[in-house]
Image 1 (spheres, protein in one colour):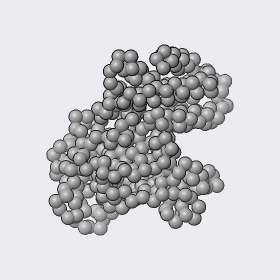
Image 2: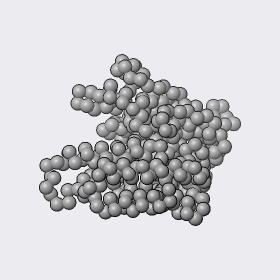
Image 3: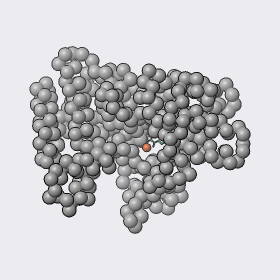
Image 4: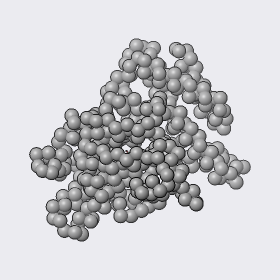
Length: 359
Ligand SMILES: O=C(O)CCC(=O)C(=O)O
Ligand SMILES: [Fe+2]
């Protein structure tokens, strides 16, 4: 994670409940066990991308009832051309199944990815998380993008195969058009023609892909495929997230510079930052403060820190987290980034004081 390089990790999912039970591997070829899923999951509305329709730089999103989606998945067997085409358009993705059914533990985050400040904070505070399920028939795909905030992502494939194109940060610049827009989709040919350095990875069931911060990627389900994925950040990339957040605020300020003299200009900028980037300064610092105080409390009391999925934070890792947060907050102070936000600046200073008291 620290060198921000992509990694494939094998054999991380074979003991997962979803790996073992969602797929009927007694038939050839193996297939999704739709009747089992209908038996354990309620007929909830699920988010579905229509891969036949472009909406800005991604696919149009609709909502379907889970059982209707699963029904169309099964229509495979009919072989009727039209139904087949319909089936292979709809991609169930970004489904918060884990938070919707918290008592159903169908997987456990691989230990390698257990240090996750974002979901640790969101889950423990009852907020919307970044833990998703993807169920995509062959031919569905995710358009060219980099992940939210510049977060890491891990994606574990539990069924089928996915083809990934992954670009180290900066390589995407070679694809900008004359209006400085990135393409909606890429092919191996367009990447090669543009002289882009990229990795092409065929991900098998049971394998995890670690997508580092700021790596653009495009993903295609070359077979019916099912995956679990988290977006997150931790001590290794929190500085990148902060820099991206700061950059996004700069963009907002530039965008509405002509309104600089209005009342509450700086607060307006934060509202727009949240709308465009997903979080604002207060959200980001609330996560940092929460992670920091949880570790400080355990440091003082000698108790353990629970991370996501009941992983326990080791003593050296705890120190690493605290030192990383101290360095980040000192950098924020040196940059004078919170000059317009005195309440947030006070929060940072008091956090720093609490860390300095124990380090
Ligand atoms: O599997 C997909 O379709 C997309 C996954 C993705 O973009 C990610 O894990 O960051
Ligand atoms: Fe992604």
